[in-house]
Length: 156
Image 1 (tube, rainbow, N blue to C red):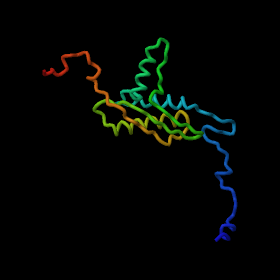
Image 2 (cartoon, rainbow, N blue to C red):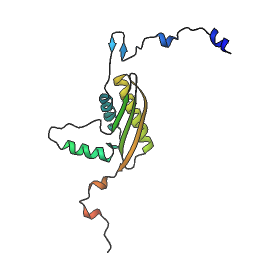
Image 3 (cartoon, helix red, strand yellow):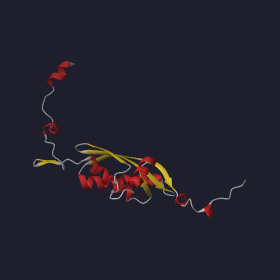
Image 4 (tube, helix red, strand yellow):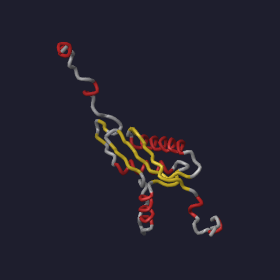
């Protein structure tokens, strides 16, 4: 059996010979995109989808709320987003709070579609996966804790 392996031609494949040219690497130079750029694009495009109340888990949202109170601080558009960026591909993890009443499956599908389209269009990277974690569901009535009339009466 080793004779058949020795007789196989040893010609280099075309992919091994081809240069690594693509949208980010050409014969004129190479473009490198930082992880923070991809995170920001993913965060902004996820927020555009109706039904997304906020990005991030409870801890990152608390830190973000504190950060926004500092005079001169900027909004962190990448909050709740983590990415792994290679030379040609990117993988994204997004943590969200969904609005009550929306279909979470449809929401996740819309987020994936919007994030993939934005990143691929703006960066030329291939998005291989977008993992979404829903940490909470936002209910509008939870914001008005000071409104005692809407609370049920206590029986003692």
